[in-house]
Image (cartoon, rainbow, N blue to C red; front, side, top):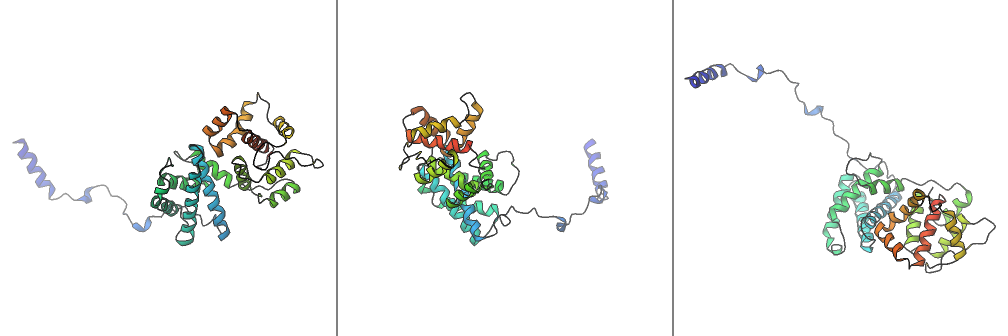
Length: 293
C-alpha cells in the first residue's frame, strides 16, 4: 500500500516537474574557452644556426643523462645523436612545439631501437620523455614533481654562455671555440674521455695555472697520459684542503656528471690509470679556477 501511494505521488508530480525547477546555472558557450599555449621553441630558436646549437646541446644532455644514470657507453652517444637528428628534422619539417618534438624523437627511436636494444638500459619513450623535460627546462619552465634533476642541470648549462672576464681568456676561448659555458663544459667532457687534443688541454691549463711570463707546461702527454708531474703536483695544491669535504665533493660532481658515479668510483678504487687521474685532476682544478664562468 505504501509503495502504491509513493508511486502515485511520483506520477502525479512528474507531470509538472521540469529541469527549470533546478537552480539556474550559467549557460556554457564554447567560445568562452581559451586555449593554453603549447610550449614552443620558436622564441628560443630564431635562426638556422641556432637549430644546430640546440641540437648539439640536446645530444649532450641525453648522453650525459644516460652516462650518469648508468655506466658510460658509446651507445648513449649514438642514442643522443639520433634524438638530436630527429629534433632538427622536426623543426625543419613540421613543428617547433615541444610535444611534437617529443613524439618525433620517440617514433624515430622506436623505429630503429633494434640498433640500441642490446646495450641500452632505457627505451625510446624514456629518451623522448627526458628530451621533453630538458626542452621545457631550456625554455625556463618551473620544475614540477617528477622532473629529472639531470634535465634541470643540463638546461642550466645550456643557458650559460658568460664570456671570460679577461681579454686573454676571451682570446684563448675564441681560438678554441669555447666562448660559451656549454662549449667549455664540452671541453671538460672531451678532456675526461681523452678525446681532446693534448695541445689544447695544455694550452688551457697553462693559461689558467701559470703566470703569463712562465713557459707553458705539458700537463698531459700526446695520448692523454701523465705529462709534467711537478706541474700536476702543483695543481693538487690549488684544490680545497683535504678536510674541506664539501668543496672537494662539489668538484668531483662535475666529473661524475659526465662519466657516471659508478665509473668514477671504480677508477678511484682501482687506482691504476694515471692518465685518467691526471685528466680528472686538471678538470677539477679548472672548475675550481672558475673555468666554467
